[in-house]
Image (cartoon, rainbow, N blue to C red):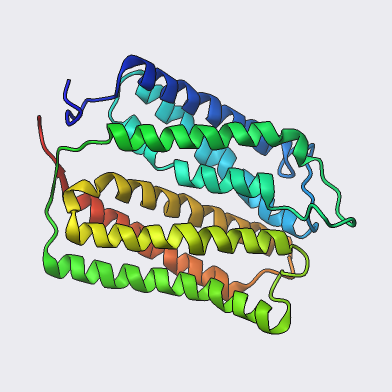
Length: 289
C-alpha cells in the first residue's frame, strides 16, 4: 500500500503500538490528574501554594479533554479509522510540554517548599516518550494526498493576522523577561522562578518559531505542510484551553497573581486560533488515491 494512501496506517506493529500507547497514555494522564491537587492531592509539587491553582486547571484539562481525546484516538487507530490520525497528531506537543514541565519545572533547590512528584518521574517520562512516538507516527501516516486551495489574498490576510498573534505572544513573554533583567523580578517570578524560565524557554525557543515556520511553509510548500498545521494547531488549541482553565481556577480561588488583562488576551488569542484552524481545514482537500 502506498504511503500516500488516505487509509495508510503504517504496518500492523506501528499502528498497534501507537494505538495502545494512546489508550494507556490517556488512562495514565487521567490517573495522574486524579492523584493530583484537583482530586486526591496525593501528588504534591515543589512550588509555591499559589501555583497549585494553575495545576488544578491543568489537571482538569488533562482529565476531561486530553485523556478522552487520547483514548478515542487510540481506539480509532486500532479500528483503522482515519479520524484517529487527526486526533493523535493534535496531542504530541501538548504532552511534551506537560511532561517536561512536570518533570523539571519545580523549585527543586527551594528549602521552603515540599513536594513528592519525583516519585512519579517515570510516569511523566512515559507520557513524554509516548508523545515522541505519536509525533513521528502521526506525521508519517498523515494524509499526503492533499491539494491546497489557498488564494494569495486569503493566505496573505491569514499570515498577517497569525504573525501578529505570534509576535504579540512573544512580546508578552519577552517583556516579562526584560523586566526580570532590569528589576530582578516580575509577576509571579519570586514564588516560582524555575517555572517562569522553563515556560518562556519552551515558548520562545520552540513553540513560537514553529508557528512562523508553519506560515512560511504555507507559502512555499503548502501541500507538504498539512501535517505540520495539524500538529501546531493541536498544540495551541489544547494549550490555550489549559491556560484559560488555569485562569478560571485562579479567579475562583481569588489568586492574587491572577491578571484579568492577560486572561482577556488569551481569550482573544483562542478566537484567533479557532478561526485560523477553520481557515486551514477549509483550504485543504483530500485527494483519492
